Image (cartoon, rainbow, N blue to C red; front, side, top):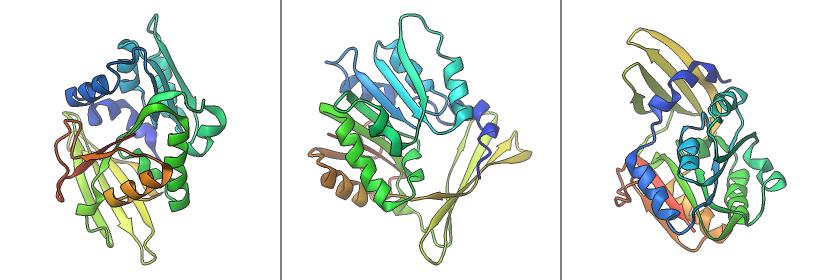
Length: 242
């Protein structure tokens, strides 16, 4: 069950677009302006609007109708190519152009909501199919190798001046995982964001395995958008696959 309406107002504060993130994308697209960019799980579309302002052709897909409404309300910039669709990863290759995109992104832990191992493998194959020759797949997620998830792991709290986002990952006896998120307003009221939502916390080794299976040849795993080396205790993972 989700209560995403509770986080929409604060989403851009909790998941800000950093200068390191901008630099990485500038490096990936330096010889491709406009680059064709697909964001999987675009949420409120803040990063996509920055990319469009940079002159790129941007597509965002999202399953949440409320998130998409926010993203579309922003889509009023003249002379920019940007569009948003309500779509799941399962539907990507049915409706999006194969061999079309120069960069595909799935950021902010959104990949773990593909909660089935078969569908997770399909995700990597589908991204490879949608990428143009020489294209890149960029993933950003927590490094779940550092969390003991049985029965519950508290992920790092994300916070802004106004709110804090608490995340708990629960694992049952069968090894199935669910996510719970709660938002705290100004140190007082706590409201739910996600409750008992099925997830698959994919590990760095599994990313490498699935990427190779799908045909990615160049697999780079970092601890952040600044391309610092991934350490065993790094809290986050940024993957650039091509």
